[in-house]
Image 1 (cartoon, rainbow, N blue to C red):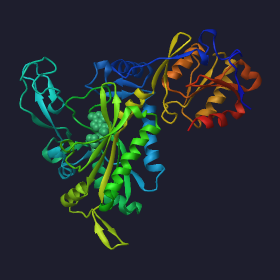
Image 2 (image 1 turned 60 degrees about the horizontal axis):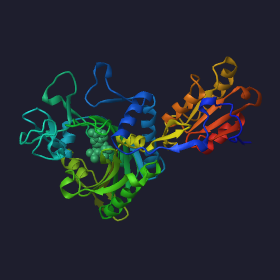
Image 3 (image 1 turned 90 degrees about the vertical axis):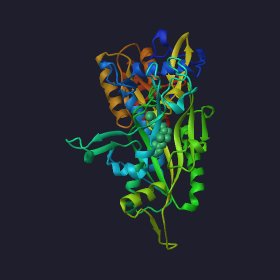
Image 4 (image 1 turned 45 degrees about the vertical axis):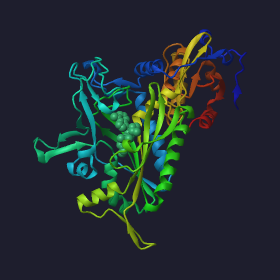
Length: 466
Ligand code: GAP
């Protein structure tokens, strides 16, 4: 069925100058520093992962748009999370709550008072900083002035707006700074509708907004971003067990999808770092080019949120356990991840270079589940003879997997483009295909090629692709 192509065999899909020969590959050591960051940011722009927002107007303050490839990668990150956290479990259900919410929610949650960062200005150059992020709190990092900072002011990070045409106090609304509160305010609705009982979780993916004082490092810290959060409601005496459980689960999720363990760690928060609602938090951290940075926080929120909302709304937000005849307010373990930040970490971890026949091959070794395109269908030439069978193959493969179709440029260049997009397999149609109804399947990581009858193609791809 499969006919492996030996190295000695001339490969119909390669041009003379771009033949991939496995034995001529020399790995390149790409250091995890600002040069990696530069390479990934450039690749993101060049290949359509991430563009600066409103670029034709000079950009807009650390805001980004996800291009044709980035939208696929980001969606795959979110789908991989949803699959692990909801689809494959019997104890978690989903939710998609509103982004706009009334002040009452944020008063109860404590965000109106507590969701603040300490803001300082340099009196000399007028630069603004978060006081807690200054390496030396006496010296301005921009102009070097000594003791030039104003006293710190607590700056609330929530975006405030007005619902309706009149900008009056009664119409004030907030863009949510976390998706979590939509879960807490729907606790009773979901409990009644889903017939789940603790321990059970409610998961949500969606946009959140924070008026960050110092956004930066590409999409690491932005004012508009996407979160993947799950609130796991447990009996109070099980809270420690579930905290440990979710710390391990979430760490392993990043490993499963390609983050090497030497670039990943769990870091418990010191007492003075804890959020106002948390009695214990551990961060999953990734070794970014500038140092360790948070990917996700796993927090023990106790019964803080349900109790606050019950008190402020007057509604009962507890659980009656029929078996024991007791009523209690569940405690909550919350794994809270950033989708856009995770996407960036997967990109950085997947970026690789090697020398092939003296030329640099850039390849994104993304997990196949995360890869934007799972396959690319590449007719060797634009000649009309190949168009019919190429379109037939594309239709067949695209019906099951996100598939690119590219008939421009030399085949070697097209392979390199797909390598840069992280496409796990390329399917090449050549003139022999017209005679033997077989195609060449090329592997992204090894560049090995096999000839496969079209009739077997879906089965062969099915062994490699999720
Ligand atoms: N509900 C809990 C909560 O929101 P958080 O640690 O503030 O916790 C969770 O946020 C995750 O959201 C972070 O670990 C990070 O991945 C992501 N995140 C937070 N602020 C962000 C920002 N300004 N830009 C991008 N991602 C952000």
